[in-house]
Each structure stands twice: as C-alpha cells, then as structure tokens.
Amino acid sequence: MFDRESWLSLLPFVVVCLAVAGIGALFTNSSVKTWYPQLHRPEWTPPTWIFGPVWTTLYLMMAFSAWLVWRGSNWTAARFALLLFAIQLVLNMLWSAVFFGMRRIGPAFGEILLLWMMIIATTVAFYSLSLLAAWLLIPYIAWVGLASYLNFRIWQMN
Image 1 (tube, helix red, strand yellow):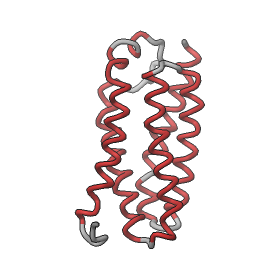
Image 2: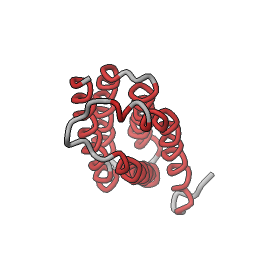
Image 3: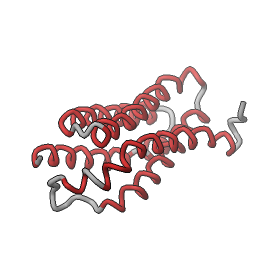
C-alpha cells in the first residue's frame, strides 16, 4: 500500500496513534473539568494544561518509533515488536477509560502498571530492531512512570 521508503508511509502510524489519543480524550474531557479537580492530589501534580501537549508529543514520538521499526525491518522480524506496540496502545486507551471514564482509581493503578511494563517490553523489542525507535520511547516510559506514581498517590489520598 505504501512504499516503505516514503515519508507518506508514516501517515497510518500517526493516524492510529492520534486516534488512540482521541478515543482516550473522549473518556477524559468531561471528568477533567468536573471530577478530577475534586480529587485530593499531591502538591507536585503537573498542571492540567500540560497533559495535552505532553501526550500529543508522546503519541507523535510513538508513531515515528513504530514506523522506524516497520520501515527498517522485514515483517517477520518486526511483527512481534509491533504486536507489543499495539497492545500497549490498547492499554493506554483503556487507562483513560478506567481512571476517567469509570472513575476507578485503584483498578486504574493496576492497569497503568501493566501499561508501563508493556511499554518497557515494547522498548526492549524495538531496541533489537532500531536503536532510535527504542530511544524515542524513553520519554514515554518516564511520563507513564510519573503518571503511575501520581495515580497511586491519588488512590491513597482519596
């Protein structure tokens, strides 16, 4: 469908990642304005306005990372790594549904830990195929690590 050498082949990866972001936002938008401000949160909680730009940047980095793996590897080599990538995308979307949609802070903590581990597994799998692809996921690991701890603290405080 797309020539692997063409930058146009990056487009489906961007569309999928931003679609996941959009679906997650459907669960998040109303709760961020109503429920989330009512929660007790640690003093170090990032300001609400920072989440949009950070997540948008991370989703674009994820798309580019997956594209590098797809583009630079034969399908047999890349298949498992891209399967892990797809699983972590689903888990990413599910966290928004559990935390903001269902407002289940405890189960969301368990889910985000699973997500964090899957991101690490994806990064390790990407590393064997593209060093740059793996490095592009490091900020994502860090941000979800912070989000995991924030989720835990909010769970404790509420």
